[in-house]
Amino acid sequence: MPGAQYPIRHLLLVPLLISIGLALSACSGGDFYRTRADFRNDDMHKWIGREATASVGVLPSQYQLTDNERQLRDLAYPLIEPPHSRPAWKSVFGDFQPIASPWRQTVVFDRTAYGRALIDEPHRSQMSRYQQLIEDVRDDITRFEPFFGSAIRVIELDKKRNASLAYVSDLSPRERADAVARMQENSLIVQWVQQCLEQRISSYRWALERLVIQAPDNIAADADRLIGELAAQTANPPVAAQPVIGRALSVRG
Image 1: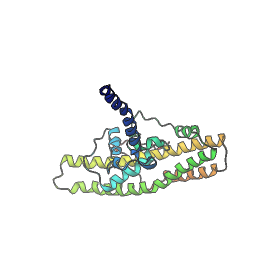
Image 2 (image 1 turned 90 degrees about the vertical axis):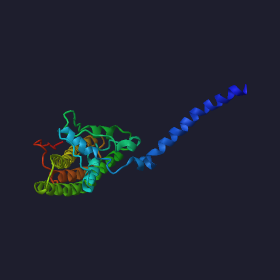
Image 3 (image 1 turned 180 degrees about the vertical axis):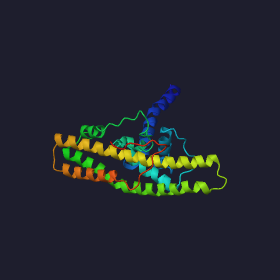
Image 4 (image 1 turned 90 degrees about the horizontal axis):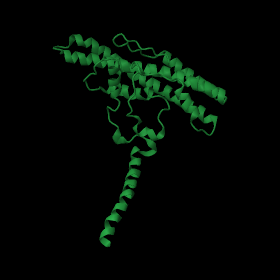
């Protein structure tokens, strides 16, 4: 019965076509799990400011981001994302995962999480664990200066913005509110990064202490030196953001 076999052959092709489609979609993340270019946009990290202001009950500004403000958010994201928290299979969407700000009551910092993940992951030798720790700390040291350089520019311009409010003609309440909200938002982002750096240092030290007792190696001294360097930089940031609406943020991890 040729007429009955024809649709059956087509039905058998459906699973094959679905499999091919899934295989092709798996490649959409880009080579070597890099985030696909068409997932990126100029304001992909704008949510950081909205999350910061919402967590302290401040309405977000409706102003568009300046180039400096956009750069501040882009440079902030790798420092507020928990270190070594994104496996390769997750990296395609990692840039779009919202993170709760430290002002939310439900946020609980676990200084052991990084070390437990580092130790529990399968490694060929203890050396690779130390090397991963060293790489993560060195990455933070590399990111430190660019972020705070951007923060200096943003905060200095916000000081000028604040001073100019008194001289703007016919300034509407909405315009003033948006300007103040954006200044608060920028300040909160800098404070958020400062807290995360303190937490990362605490996590790194916990991880190193466990590595030393579980798998002692002379390379531990290199890791300790780098953690100390990051801690010294974090303890003396080149710019300090003013607390928003009187809510100072403790940055000790």
